[in-house]
Image 1 (tube, protein in one colour):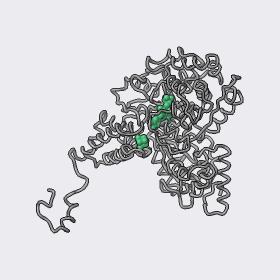
Image 2: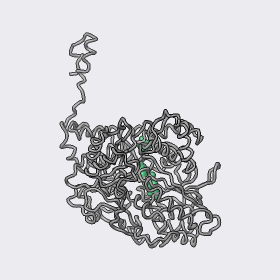
Image 3: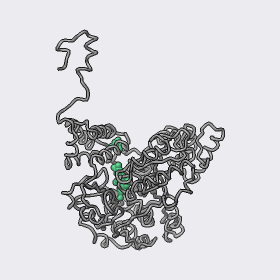
Image 4: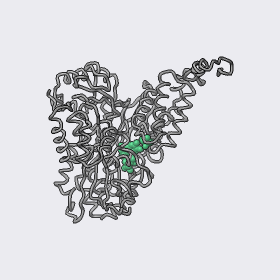
Length: 603
Ligand SMILES: Cc1cc2nc3c(=O)[nH]c(=O)nc-3n(C[C@H](O)[C@H](O)[C@H](O)COP(=O)(O)O)c2cc1C
Ligand code: SF4
């Protein structure tokens, strides 16, 4: 075998190998997710024995390790293949036909592992490669721009058990695809520039500068960044500790979003600089970058940037010679759970637990990581903060609109000639973006990903900004040829799959919406199903515990309102048609009770 993974849990050596993997992983980072990832990689699954060994080593309950393994989709209790292949199933970077082709070539049933353990093939939610066409992850490494020819070649490489290091290197190259630059991407920020400006201002003035800039969170909700930092700075310290934390949310799981991937790949210094500035303002000594599991391939490069910043005195103790200014950053990688982008779920995950959203209030600014005051901001928000310190709040405010200062980086994908990264001043119209990316004959645009808004052509004059269309950055284009029903079905499956299951309206409601849509898309739906979906959609929106459930019905509700024909043309009946014949179902009861009179019938 040319692969060093161990799959047998019966081998006498396994216990020793298990211990050595756990010890090695703990030496790098004793974080539960990190240790489990190391085990998954080496043994291709996490066995009962491994769960107990990890619990003992990290001194956490077995039940906690067990529940974490079950929660994250990149951990498995039964072995995956030596080549574990996950196709994205996003509407922009997914292609199920290609997945079926590879399954055929390798004789693998989708979702299962081949009996000889050679390969497993499955699907996963968007892997953030939407500007590169169809994409997959093989043992965690992305391959983009797939076509049938590449699939045939991949099948050959797998069958011959060729190590990934010998696969064509260009397959693993992920281009930034930056098409339009602006305030942030015209980067003239040298490492340390923002920090030096910050030290010249002092913490209070720096905070004031961030508030004055009008910077609002780029992760979607648009909360004032300066106010968030202020609340955290002023938060009472809890009796059991006196720490504060900075967390960069690099979970970027919203389908159609990939701008954080590019910022982390080519502008990581700005992001880390923004985090360090935040640390100085709120008095934190520790920061975390929470990196989505799909972006693990960026880890070595990010660690190199951190090491260089330490060498330059931009991280560590007495940063830039300032006595007492101590701050460092660690990276924790997720393991395939969209919900971990929600800030309180992210904090739970950072604490080595299942990513379940917490009750809010209290908010992370007062009770965050380990119960201490914590700022959570998006990657782009931190990068913007670093630039604001370098150039001043007036520079930032001079771009954008009154309530939406600065620029927004968009991830443009779908049916257009030039998918990629576009940075615009806030206030740009949807039509302008469509013109720039070479989109023609456009039917609809999904702004902000599945949890955002579906806009038809009569809304293309609307402007991106917090006044009208706020967005985390996903901009998916759907041309006339696109079957919007397929898109909406895809989104419904995404939410049902990613619901963390904590609250009933979302857990059950997203499954009902998915089933209802499948029924309508399959030509078996009635007006009754449509009305039910509308009712359930409103219920999920109002009753769900967190933002996932509160937005999960958006694609269906939007399209029912703006594109009713895509549903109506598929309905078999306008009236209610029961799924089964209740009177016939009572036949047995009539037989047992020896009744067949009119009153024993429903009709
Ligand atoms: C289901 C869900 C997923 C989210 N995913 C992300 C994400 O991937 N990245 C992000 O920055 N914010 C995400 N958010 C928003 C975060 O909860 C939080 O508002 C954000 O990180 C705050 O940073 P900001 O103020 O800089 O935008 C998500 C929210 C929800 C409800
Ligand atoms: S709304 Fe959905 S994702 Fe959020 S807590 Fe409830 S079940 Fe979990």
